[in-house]
Amino acid sequence: MRIQPIALPSQNKFIQHYRAQEQELLNKFHYNPYKQEEYEKRAQELDSRTFQREELADHLQVVNKKWGAGDATFTNIERLRNPESVVVVGGQQAGLLTGPLYTIHKMISIIIMAKEQEDALGRPVLPVFWIAGEDHDFDEINHIYMPQSPRMKKHKILQKQMKKEAISEMDMDEEAIQSWLDRLFVGLHESEYTNRIYELFKSEIKGSATFVDLFARITHYFFSEEGLVLLDAQDEDLRRLESIYFQEMIKKQPEISEGVVRSLHQTAQQGYAVNLEAEVDDGHLFYKWNGERTLLMKDEEGYWRGKKDECCLSEEELMHIAETEPHLLSNNVVTRPLMQDLVLPTLSFIAGPGEVGYWSALKSVFESLGIQMPPVMPRLSLTLLDRKNEKWLRRHLIDVEQAVNEGVTEDKSKWIAMQSYPPIEELADEVKRAIERAHRPLKEKAHEIRDDIGQIAEKNLFHLFRDVEFLQERMAQGLEEKHSRELEVFDQIDLRLHPEGGLQERVWNILPFVNDYGPDLPKQLLSVQYDWKKAHHVIFL
Image (tube, rainbow, N blue to C red; front, side, top):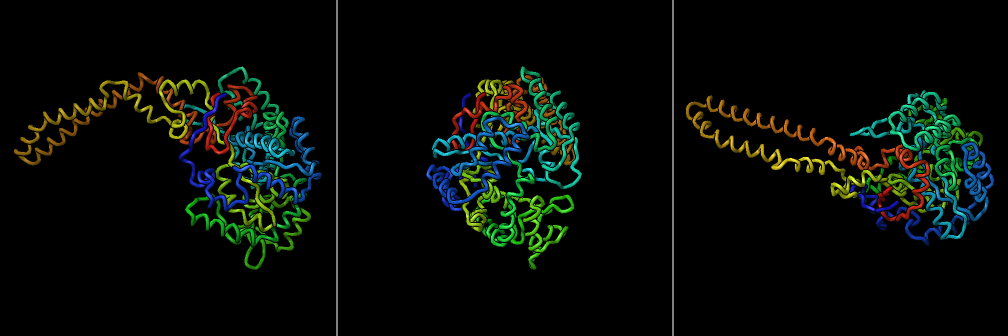
């Protein structure tokens, strides 16, 4: 494998300036993730805090065993009992077949950073992936996209979500997802790996009760030897460990909410856009009411209400729920990072570009509970380039950085124009000019005779031009048909490197790649030397 770092000019200003270590942005965080001494300071901070290591390790042993983890994972879970151990963590929703490629890239980032920091700090550093099983938006995970030239086609599972429940608690319709898998593989070209991968996914479906189970089992298969530890944020046993932290968040709601609003206002004044909205009455917690997740607000009288007034709880009632039935509570985008840091001895958080933005609003949230946020490192961003598309890029002298950032539509237009000499458009313009010159005396004479006849002459010229343009269009169409095979090459490059006008990792799933390169591909991507400061890396497979 070969690697080429490239720039991403289209990325938002916030993440670009964060990578450049602009001080006004670094001031919104407690640590600079690009300086090694900051990780040493963070490790010392974690040494001064206490964590429920034994209880957490016991829980992780149980759930990772259920998900078919490899021996390396259980070794790491045991190392969590060591009071010197710390973790590198990141998370995502439980996407089908792991969802968009960026989820795999985040896992790779977590594993690589854990290894790097264990070597640098000389203490156990565990890779942990936090599955956002409490999320209830099924529409975000119920599909994947697969290539169907010239576009990506959405393949959606035919299962309905009957109520607004956590994905972790939603039973998976085995028949529906097996049928969905069969449809995917019908459209997949057969390789030496196809049957093996199909049987793997089929087996993992049979071994899964929920979408979180399926996500976890496939993840453990891909990274079986890397010691990746998985955690479901919605698990009831984990919720019991979180009980005391929910109580702290309830008590500190005013400081948490006011701090977020204040920080977002300051960031907006500095000219940065952050994908987070907050009001001072936001409770930043969900409550399971009548089987559905309900976002809580805190009113002026101190009552906690559903955002649509579905329920009403006094603070004492909510505190009692946190103490006795914590599984009824879950975090939102503001308190999830806080809970993660209270549960896990987090050396570093691996974040997507959007996450880096909203974490910038959370400094005071962490401080309200007397702790600091970990170094927030943007995850590795990758494009996977197969040999066929690499060859096509070279053939047409197209720079891979340009193809990833802009696509090749302009190159396609230039190429087809060059297949006719002189170009059809140039010839048509020349003919129009000749017609106009030849027609001018006739038009002038028509105007001399009478105005209405002059207007007929004008229309006559217009129709002559229209006939030329019609011929021009038919000639261009014929030229495209003649060279359709080569034009398809440009479409394929766009589909692979700039799908739907964006990055490959945001649209493509891992399936076509493991079908071509085998199920060990995710592990092979761990062997590449990456640069954390670079915006994007192209991997030549």
